[in-house]
Image 1 (tube, rainbow over the protein chains, first blue to last red):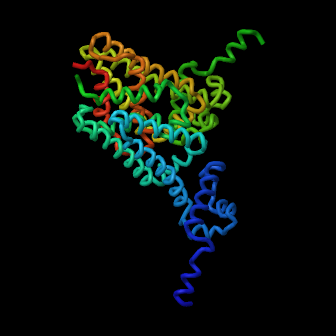
Image 2: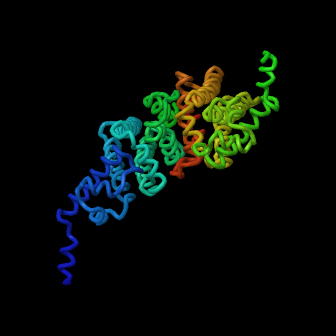
Image 3: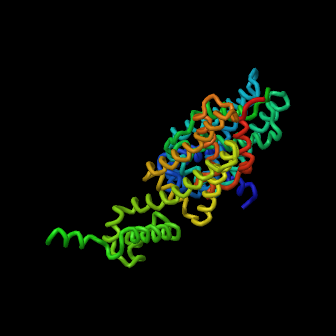
Length: 207
Length: 207
């Protein structure tokens, strides 16, 4: 077999990006309806009327498909956070409030659209921690930038902006983690706006 | 059968409190070693060399045993929190720091002693929310009392002590919830002391 023939044989019937997207969309739907644990690569292939081997040409495992699905959701949240972080005409405190609100909204929307998201996130934490860690780092970096900006502008009075940002990030987990937002009965958590005001108060310059 | 005979027949071989305690200790051990889901009332009875029917004379279900086991752990934490909350010679801020530290320590100790605690807590949240809710309320009430005390003493400057206390309570979930303490990889959460300092800063009277 010539090299050209081998290459031709490896090109999927459809263009690779389209098939990749179709696999991800089908997997996302299956994880949402059937659940992550119960969905197999064979199920995904069957829905797409292709062979499991063909799915494996694009993703080496169910875990790899799952990582691509959750990464897409995380990327979307990161984009929304990045936009809120640079919104013109808003001071650093207002933009921190916007960023946290956007994170909470994205989480609530996702939990409502996918009641089994909890299962996907649990699997991600256990099996794909690097993907989760990168997402947490991206959000942490946005918050850190805003606290630093406010400190430089004299809006905040903080000894260590990185620690202050990490405190805010950790303090809002109740409102921004799918496992806590979707699966946890409400037990006296204050409204998000009250929590944001409380946290920002810690940053403010003393008179 | 006379009434007296019926009563005599209902008295366990051992005194009721002792048997009750033995059932709880055995159940706690089984939940810890085998896991809550896999442990049956029959297993607990077998370990105790008694009939399942005898266990059911003390607890109507596995759920009731489980509730008694977790309530014992929660009561212990509540006692430690109550002690920290009234420690003499410490101002309100110091006692809030002590209370949060005690909660974190109790959680860490329990997670270390019982790597399956996570499973028990998950079952408690799903099946016995009232027990969890009462525990959360007890801790919330201790924190509220301390913030109010600090506000009255002029140590804190807060518009609404109840909301401020709820914010602190919710902000520390990362350090005091078994599911997050034991089962969650560390992802940049600041040291607890830094978080406590950050939260107390929000309460402080402005110069």
